[in-house]
Length: 341
Image (tube, rainbow, N blue to C red):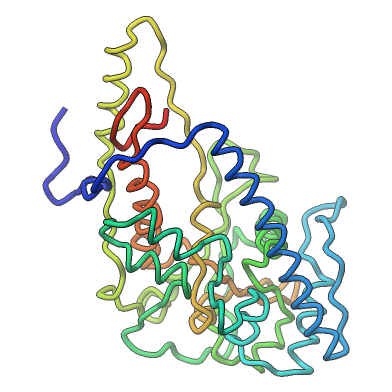
């Protein structure tokens, strides 16, 4: 099988030394600690938002599960947030920072990412500076020129209305995780800089199309006036990746070393992992959408999949994982991209 083209680099070429792989016990402890910290930060977030809302005479609704009668947005949370904004009229960045619990002393948009830990574990990683910026303040979006002010919401793709329950279910999941804002449509009068792009829904593998699908935020529409058209690509990190031929070589290696065993490949959807990259509060206004059936504007606060810069941004995160794996040895593989199986 031919080697990767010279323009493509291995994500672990820059590893400086080999570290010992963590034991199973250490991994279990680390995961338990992570879960405890996540619960603590969520409690702090809810307490912070609740306190701010109370000061404006607005009650923060108790978190609820999705409606058993069918997919729906959290209308109580939508109403409470909208009323708070009407009464206090914060800037959009200030409200995002409130929801994310981003005081000046700890501006991290995602509390699960700790810059000091990343700096230690990824020392020598080519894109360490970009990784630390994402962890410290979020993803910045550089434009060729300012986006125009919209006078009306763009029409969604027909699939968004035809598969409205799927659209609602996907948005609700992000709403419950505070990774997007769902607000009454009139809030754009307070935040006129909000720029909406159409929603659509496409099939997700062989899943039931009535209950499952992938939401598309069409950031390339309209062609000459979209977020993607206005994005300056020179400020986007260049994507680097492990060539797909390495997967085939690893399968062949495993088969040669274990001729009497089947070689299995585990596949998964990594979409939720990349949602950990949050957009900087000053740029979230570029990633809005509108659901007319719910009179709701949606403001995505995570780095959007359809954005021009998403591939480079995700490459920085994925490259960090590959770097750590590539510089860690185990009993069966002392070093390399595929050393944890």
